[in-house]
Length: 157
Image (cartoon, rainbow, N blue to C red; front, side, top):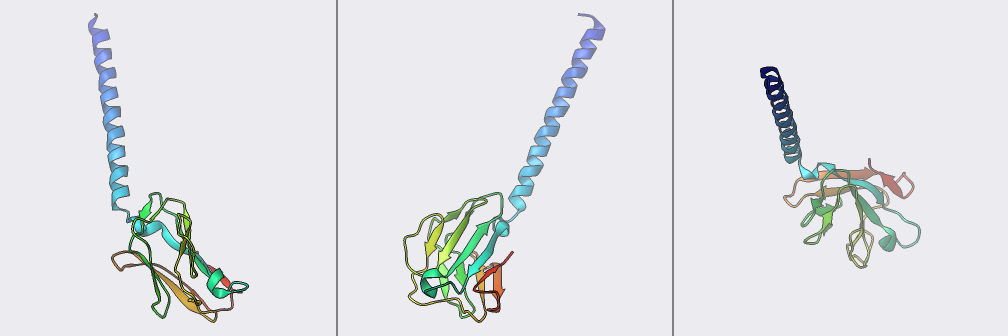
């Protein structure tokens, strides 16, 4: 092998090693960024049906959406109103990235898209109230308020 060809091969190999190091460094940086973003950051109260047609207790619900890029374990999270009525998310409930869940005031069977508080009377005040969402550590994640002039429902974000 000629010295020129050997030098060219070494340069080529060096460029490949540099490229691999750059790719690995970028992957590591992205990983570190993702690990420092709180998983709760993307979870919001997106909609509240506080005065539905018909029976309030059967039609009331709060829609919670995960706008984040990772699933969020909501075990022990709480949804509360201004009077401190509290719904606690069941153990093992996970809200996938991009997914939503309705928390209904009334009774029903829980699944990945619908959870039921089990109340036999309305929780959300038609003339104004605030829905508060807390993580399992008690930190306020989001809130949504209304005055009662929104026509029975309010979009929060």
